[in-house]
Length: 221
Image (cartoon, rainbow, N blue to C red; front, side):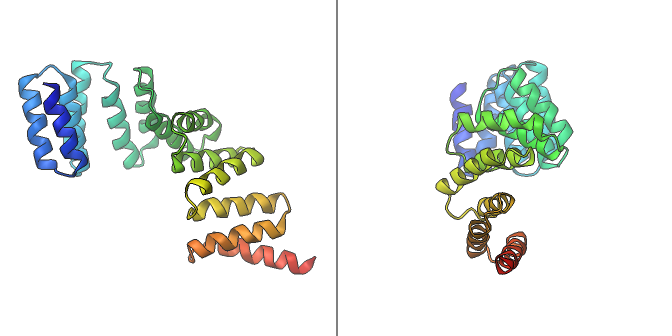
């Protein structure tokens, strides 16, 4: 019954949740011991905000097959959205242990660890996410932030430059480059970066503050 699941996923991607529910329902009825239908059904419920019901479907999938990596990933995503980062981390780790190898799961595990203020542990996962998806702007940017927190400034700057190559309107990447250049005492370049961040996002308070500091520093030279 794989085709009902495939069709349901297509409907879900188009935002046609009712049609998706119908397909996954049929998939489950036709094949009640296959965890895939339950995971898909849970994902639809999560997408429409029915989180408690969604959890039950993910748990059912794990009862049927405790190596269903996608179920752990989906539970992790629910916890992550609720800002329960410790529980999210455990679930993403479980998904990886059960064989999930895509960029998303490494990114989500890395981000959970960043929110838990464990950048050293987050670093290899964010790095892996970037290796697996070299054009993921957000993963590259977050990898840069993680490197910066660990004071690998040059490595971090490379990632922020990459971010801007992929998305020239990424205000936060310019802002963080400004901070890095200021740290390196390259005041003029830092000022340029803060100015660029503000051109993209005029209400960027941190960039505004950085710009003032650099202007002051230039006057004192």
